[in-house]
Length: 314
Image (cartoon, rainbow, N blue to C red; front, top):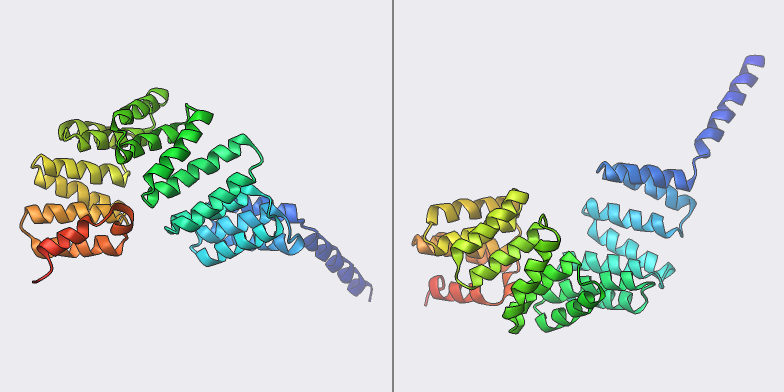
């Protein structure tokens, strides 16, 4: 009996230790697992934290972010909805949900969330972030004038913000202000010579001017900084095509598609290469893929017109 009593006491002590883990401890461990990309383990731990404290905003955000990384997108969206219902005045929740919607090309819904976040933003710096994000959504839906207006507001707040400068450079050509493009882009690389997205937009500007060799120089810079940048390869491919470097163009575009198979624009470029090689069946397949991956929504009807010209039987 004495031994049995001692065993029960030890068991009770162990149980007390196990049950003593706090919500904050679960949260801290979930964040560590998240940083290690151990998302399934992180989800279990953050759910344990939420069981103890179901109305902690940091816990809910971590759960939503973890679900997103696990590709459980609806559950991530639902978690943001729940968090917003509890904390309707926390602007960053609306911004986060807007970014999720933006990643799925739900541009109008994303813009609504960014606008709501702007209206209740707690600081000018937060408002600047939300306006910049809204401009990106407007750019994505080809509302170039709306994007330009947002970007000018962001620029007046911080004329040294690299993202704002780069996006301003990208949108100027679209609204008939092409003379401003290089002003913003060159300022961006002057402020941060390692910010390769600006080099990409400078390359694109020279591409639009028909200066394809100059464009390639800037896309080379992009790939020097980031050899895995799919858009650097696809844009360089197009300029090589324009210079008649068919083999180099095909090598670049195949690399780009391998790195970023969801990029509809890359299939358009490869279709143009196939057309140049008189491989019409391959070109038509790529034009169809471009359409299926959303080219028309983002860039207009060029691939549809190419399809009508080269693919559809009369």
